[in-house]
Image (cartoon, helix red, strand yellow):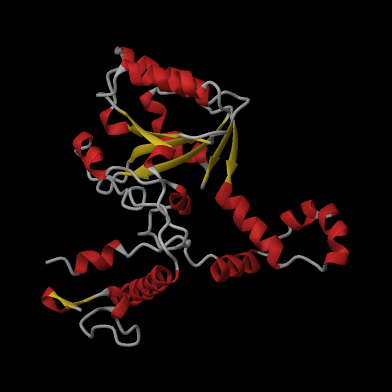
Length: 285
């Protein structure tokens, strides 16, 4: 159980006994990492892995190597759908937006998942780029509904210079993470069933008079997997993504993109917390 250079597996660490040579901040990171790893390990023991058949989905990479036939296939397909989920990933080194994941919400399988690689887009004067713009034009129609974990307009703002779509986005956008947290707060503080009708009638009042500290306490208590740490860049909605062929992705991308959770299989367990990047770097040989 002991690795090289006396490195102890994260989930086996004694959180009450951090290494003496660490400063206060490093000790805090060390303890936090151990706590997260212990929770993750417990969840892995408690829940079995859910395997999704590859026939249920199709991954389509959009970049300068994508064929016009593939793009036309996408365009023909998405024009019949009006609900999509979005996720974004930053490049680990530059912290710039590098990957946009778009998934249509299907009425029937298979499900299409589009991975748009911003660092590998074709030139503006190519037919492929024109097709990409057509794809976004269809997806961002005003009648469509877009679901994201976080403020989508803010996440996509840095792509304006790529000229992939018209700004601002006119589609209906739903921040699932925000709605989920508010829903959680209202559920945890909801009155008895006998008062349910008056509770719904006063929803606006409840929404606009949430005590910030109570809100934070509810989130901290019930959403342990949503990290407040600045070094945890992965959002909760990645637990909804489906498995991706990592080897295929590496053939296309030269950049190191922080998509470890995006590329792992779906599980029925709650979202596992990320191990701190700082903590990992300290123990790299």
